[in-house]
Amino acid sequence: MNVKKFLAMGLAAVMAAAVLSGCGGNAAKDGGPSDKGKIVVGLDDNFPPMGFKDENNEIVGFDIDLAKEAAKRMGREVEFKAIDWSSKEAELKSGRVDVLWNGLDITEKRKENMLFSDPYMDNRQILFVKKGTTGITDEKSLAGKVVGTQSAGTAEEYMDKSDFFKKQVKEVKKYPDYVAAFMDLENGRVDAIVGDEITGRYYMSKHPDTIEAVDTAIGEISMFGIAFRKDDQKLRDEVQKVLNDMREDGTMAKISEKWFGKNITK
Image (tube, rainbow, N blue to C red; front, side, top):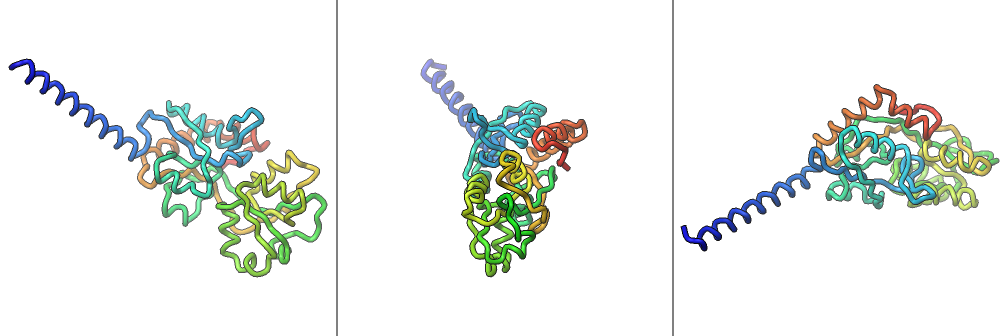
């Protein structure tokens, strides 16, 4: 065999190996993270106490602690990626994130496009008002009022389908996050907020003199779950197994107590 022919054969072998390696990489990307690859968690980073930036600009929260512990037990690296929450399904489907883990309600509509973990926490939508407000006691008492909520959330979905909110509520204001909504409540720009109890009560704990809760559920009680791509059953099952272990050994309860003062996980 002459040298030129030998070199040509060697180059062809290298090119073939590169092609095969590239195909393998794309397949892993298309099918989700590899068995020990990094998991990219998509979240709204202004959703306390589930996931938000602290005074040091670090992303912290209940779901953050939960995801970090789960990833540690799985032997994986985890990256938290702030996304436009109103485009969360597109971010997941495109592969820019591997999971949505940020106080996401499980709904039948969402289950059409996403694969969910088992529920790990109940979530109610309740009313929040400015301290000292009277006359707002339940859903019907919102007639003629200006009501705020977060866009792309469960409360918005409920109100968009409700004839009462369409016809009898003066105005429904939608905000990019609950922090902006509660600030407007404090400043008197809205009469009440319909929002996640968990988020609202955490905000209340930081502003005890300005905000109070009306302990009345609005709409159905929902449940939080972790969302995966529809074809990512393997990753879903791997995460679920770790969550089950964390529930059984008390780790999930400890994380809940840190953020909420008691165990409110399922």
